[in-house]
Structure formats: structure tokens, C-alpha cells
Length: 209
Length: 322
Image 1 (cartoon, each protein chain N blue to C red):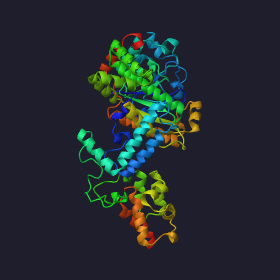
Image 2: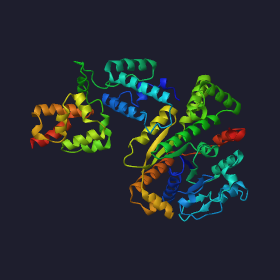
Image 3: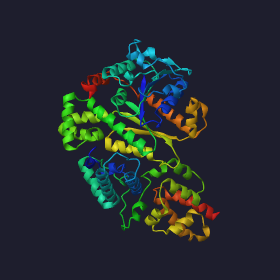
Image 4: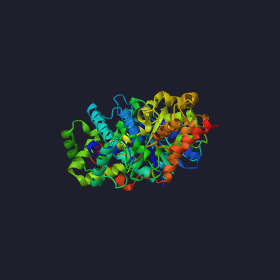
């Protein structure tokens, strides 16, 4: 086997060094599935011992990369070893804004136009985002296409799953004030690293009209 | 330039002959001079797949010196531009051809002038199967989304991997490396040739780099056949990534081919599926697959057999090259 120990955390999870937290979560989920005990895609390829070793590496990689501080320390180490290029780390393209508060949600708030969201390259997502008006159903399709559960978004945005469901089901009578709804939508869209303004506006259009 | 495509996979039913036959017909109809060669020497049935009745003329004639050149064993089909070397008349000697004979076939293939040569390989990992993967820099692996088929294809890929390494060493040198690998991890050689590479890299870093480069030079493709709606949509991608990550072998996923009961229908009637059922999802998938291979040739893939590679293969001395 190509020595597992020599693969970087990024290689273990099939990520590029500039991967967003969203991409890291997705890759982690995919990896767990692929290397699970009953996974068909690795059938007969590894011994049980090897499989557990790989899973341990996946856990380690995820735990490091999803933690902002640990990740930046790890990136520095890779850069020093010459295994990673200076400037290729996540967020290096955007303006360095002082991260105020560290509850995680400020992280994406500082994302600028300099960083191209890769979820936007998915053809289905592209098609959805090319529409003039966006419905709750569109948001749901987008979310499903990217393989994210409502609960995952709820956990990250701290918005109740019930509220998110109302947004996706266009239950206008149950939605909060415009101001709140806008901020909820923004958080929802940011989870996918898509440009929030254009999506939020196109959802809100229907409520105005 | 002749583009050579070995097509291999698991046991009967994974779709090797089905894909080879339909790919051959499609390429020929696009104006490419295409040769289908039935390289399943003991279980030939490619002729049936493309609707050609039993033909006595075939590879055996060349090996038995009934004819002087491999080109003389080629038969025309009803489809313009499509030619076949049938295995229908193969005898047991052909199925178990000796090493020198196999080399003779390889050299003869190299002399044929076609746009495409498609080699429909047999199941299993006998040397007479896997060595055909060493005469081109590319190849197509076919599997269905079932554990049995996936197990077979992994085994085949590892066998090709081990065989490629073998090709790069002299016999006693290789034996010593095998011994060292066995000492470190029992039963690893053909089940886990990755360990062999690790040993080489450890003991002879320079040679290790050469081996890694040789493995990385392959441009293998993976096709997931008989794909059903409930199967994991990313399965093919995942398999390829896993092979790249853990074996260091480039493996490109080139698509699913939808399962359709009509395939059986077409096979039973011995008519090309693409002609009979052109408006099915399966036909659309097949066309995509064919187009991919056509484009791959324009990028220079499938080139070979390089003289050099053949010479190396020919030098694999002793005991059927092993």
C-alpha cells in the first residue's frame, strides 16, 4: 500500500488545500461512508486492520482541518516541509478580517468575492441559480443535490429545523419578519459557500410581490 | 496511430464482450477502421455478440502456423470498417498458449494497422489475460456494482500492477524482492502488490521511483456496467479515487451504463444493442462511453505496443515469465 502515513490530511480526504469548511465536512462524510464496514466500494480491498487504520487517519484529518487553529498550524507545517504552497491555504485569497468572536459562524461571514465557491460549479446548482426567482423548493433541491441534511444546516446556523422546513416549503404565514427571514436565508446559503445576496434577493422577490 | 484497448473485468456477465462489441460497432460506423480481437482464448464469444455465425478461421490458425501472419486470420463483418479475429475455433492449446506464443501474438498485434484494436479479454488473472494490459498504456476495466464483481476487478487491477513491477526487474532480482516482501508481510505479493512497491522504495529508492512512474503512466478507465437506479451514484468515482489513493494507479471513471433487461434480449437475438434499442438510457450511456474512447485516441491514449515494452516483456524469462 502507498504508505498511509505519508498522505497529508488533505490527500486522505481527497481535498485541495484551499478547501472550505463545507467541503471538508462533505469529504469527511463521503470518506466515512466509503470506508465503512459494509461499504461495497472497498470490498475485498483491505484487511479489517487496514480499514481501521484508514478510518483513524480520516478522523485525525477531519479533526485537524475542521478546527481553524489546528488547521492553520498544520498548514504552516506543510508549507515548511514544502508539501504545500504558501498562499494556497483556505482564506489566503480573501482579505484578512479580524475574526471577532469564535463561535464558528464568523468564519464564513468574512468570505469575500476573491474566493470562488465551488458548490457553484455543480451543473444542477448552476441551473437552479440561473433562475430569476427562487422558491423554497429550489433551495431544497440545491441542498439535496449537495447531499446536506436539514439537521446539518440547523446545527451550523443555529436555526430551528422546523423554521428551515417552513422556508423550504414556502409556508409564508409561518415565516418571521422580513429582517429575520433575510438573515436566516443568508445563513442557509452561506453554509454552501454561495453568494448569499443574490439568492436571498431572489427568494424575497416573491414575498414582496 | 493504432489505439489499443484491452477490456477486462470480472467473471461472466460483467459486460466485457458486450462493451467491446458495441464499442467496436460504433467506432466502425463513425468511420474508424476497427479490429475486434477475441482475447478470451478459452471462452470466446465475441463473434456471437456482434452477430457473426461460427467461423473456423481465427487465432489458432496463426499459432498452428496454418497461416503466416496474424492479418490473415482477420475476418470481415457485415459492418464496413469492422473486422474480427475470432476465437470461436480456438483449441485447448490456444487457451493455454505458451509464453513464446503469446509474445508472438503481441509482436503480430503491433504490426497491424488499424485506428482501433479492441481486445476482449477473458475473466480471471491468468498471465495470458493480464499480460494484454501491458501492451498498451491504457485499458478499460468493467465491473458491475456488486461485491463479487468489484472483488474480481480489484484482483485484476492488482494482478496487472504486480505484473508491471515484475516486468521491470530481472528474474532473480524480482525473486529476492518477493522474498523480502513475504518476510515483512505474509501472502502479500499478489494479494497486496502495494507492499512489494513499499519494499522496493525502501531498499532501492531510485528503482522505486522508476516503478512508481511506470505505474503512473497507465491511463486506465473504469466503467460501471448494469447500473441500477438504487445504486450509489458516486460509486464509480469512489472506486477510482480509492485505487489512485491506495495503489497509486491512475484510474479514470468514465461512466455508468444503465441496467436494462433489453440487453439480454439483444444478445439473445444476436443483434447490436445500439441498433436495436437506440432510444434507451443504456444506449445513451453506451454512446457516451464510445465517444470517450474516441476522444481518448485523439489525445494519444491507447498507444502501443511500444517496441521497448514488448522487448521487456519478451525478456521476462523463465517459467512463463514468472
